[in-house]
Amino acid sequence: ARAISNSSSCSRNGSSSASQVVMQTWDFAGQELYYTMAHVFLTANGIYALVLDLACWGKAMPSAEVLDSLDFWLAALLVHAPEARLIVVGTHADELLEETPSAYKRLDEHLTSRLNGMPGLQARLHANEDEQLLFFPVDNRRSTPSACRSVDQLRAALNELAIKAAEVRIPTRWAHFFKQLEDTKS
Image 1 (cartoon, rainbow, N blue to C red):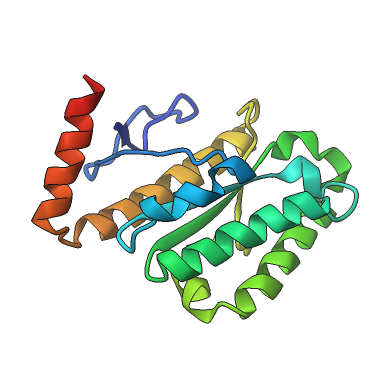
Image 2: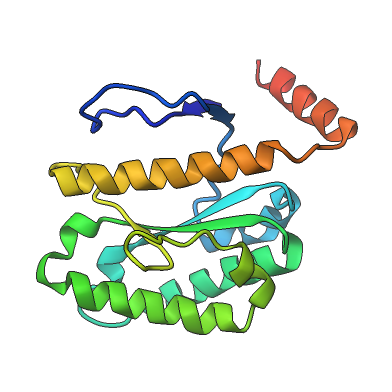
């Protein structure tokens, strides 16, 4: 579990938000190997960050494997956690260079076409309103003020989703199950 706050290595003022949420993250890695078990962990109370490599969207549409993986995860969320919150993150924005506008457009149009057929999931998507995109592009190097802002925007969006999710009560048996899982790690 890790606290998500508004202060970061990129922030200049060093202040943190009064509202902090501690989140537990599980990385499904996205590979086909994990497809068979992922549905066990998908719940309506989750916040799902679908993370994509923007470099794959650079000069043309990505490979069929990338598109199939994206479709799988969107469909898995729709089927197993239709009420869950979703945020799409595009990493490696720093690798796009001059292809940035066309790559953003390709990904945004693809997400739009896929989500149009999934209205329930589309309604639960937390879009990047500042940039008018369905995803949050981030520069993994955080080497420029703009790159730091993108990370801070993503952090703020996740914090907002987490605060909303924290308002939802979870069944006691889930809390007990999670406690037992934590105890088995030790």
